[in-house]
Amino acid sequence: MTLIQRSIRPKSSDPVRCHRPASSSPRVIYPFSSPRATGAKDLSFFTYHLLRTERPQLRIRCTHAMSSLAYKEMDRFSAPARLMIVSDLDNTMVDHHDPENTSLLRFNAMWESIYRHNSLLVFSTGRSPTLYKQLRKEKPLLTPDITIMSVGTEITYGDSMVPDEGWEVVLNKAWNRNIALEEAGKFPQLKLQPETEQRPHKVSFYVDKGHAQEVLKSLPGIFKSRGLDVKIIYSGGIDLDILPQGAGKGEALSYLLKKFKEAGKLPLNTLACGDSGNDAELFSISDVYGVMVSNAQEELLQWHAENAKGNSKIIHATERCAAGIIEAIAHFGLGPNISPRDSLDLLSYKPEDINPAIILVTLYIAYERWRQAAAENYESFIQSLKTICHPSGTIIHPSGVEQSLHEWIDTLRPYYGDKQGKKFLVWVDRAFTSKIGSDTLLVKFDKWELTDEGRNGCVTTFVLNSKPDSPGSFSLVHIHQTWLEGFAASTDDAWIF
Image 1: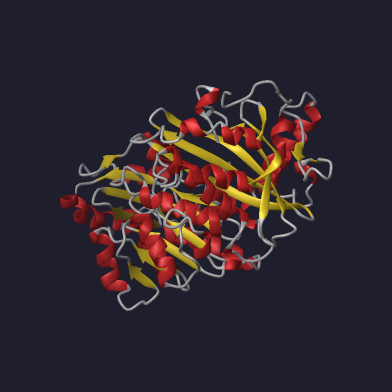
Image 2: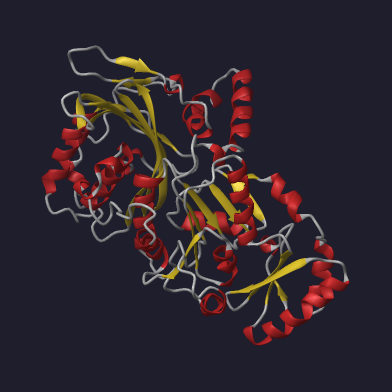
């Protein structure tokens, strides 16, 4: 028997079939029938089929809806977010000295399993949109709810990165990019950064550390004489950014917090995370917790010593990068900091923190380790899958092939250890759960694999039925997978689960 049986090829427009026990007939559930399918996160699940329809009017309506709802990405909760993490990327969330991305994957698993459904993830980076997107291709980063880029001069929402036009209006005050470029260009010590790093509200240069102080003393007076109210940020021992006075990572965060407060949805707790000079502003905002990761640069540590040494809400972590963020969550008591990558034992969680996302994240980590032959018991993973999956459940491969879940599980055995000694990373992104029936849950997420051959991903949907005889337990009755655009595997058999 091959891994994928090709005898059944359902049409892509087929509804999800939610199988009941043999005593009752299967019922058909259309994902868009959910009463919760009114937000951007739910819309994306069913628009895939609508956008492929031959009826143009449906495509137009659907596209317009997606565009307008993207602006509401930050408003997807009916109550304030439990936690908002605002993190720098390079050498904070991402450890460039960790080729296995160990701490980043630990954070990913923790966030998707515990926090994604009721908290906000914000990336605040000095990178331009071009370099930010490049980093996303290279590293297993999660999709943030909000992205602050170009040293706080650009704010966007959701995966579609819809810009905050109100922030652009704020930054236009007393700003003239041409004058800033003209005057700074008169300093031979300054070397203009690549075109991708020059943004509407940011002019960026390189400057050697030995010349930095001389330039930093001279520029403010020159700009003031030309009527410009600017902010000059020097970070990393080489980067010099000229911004409007109202810009910067700290100002961008303050702007977001003000918007949340005006909407009555100020996050219960906010944790700022950074490693360099351009992150200092994040730690200057009142009522915000802060963590300088253990590998923080001298310029940030010096700022802390001079400005915030007695502030108990800011710590210097003992762990590097994302591991330091996990450490800070525990230090400040902001919530659970258990990552499924540290413990696959669901008993290590408090009962109130157990949810379908924890189960699916744990399942995929176990699958990753099983393929790597890191699992101690060869057969236990197979049996665990069969226990979770309903006997009449089905799985639809991204190729469109449908198969019985239990028959599919039996085909997995030859793949045990086939990735041993090779690159094989699995992670889950954008995991959201919706109740679509009195005893039925739909969990939608992006599932990614990174191998020596490249990166593949698909939108995955789990349909789970609660077990009447075991409250809080679920039976997996259907899996549906659709390739993410541009990330299909080279062959059908290269994607197993």
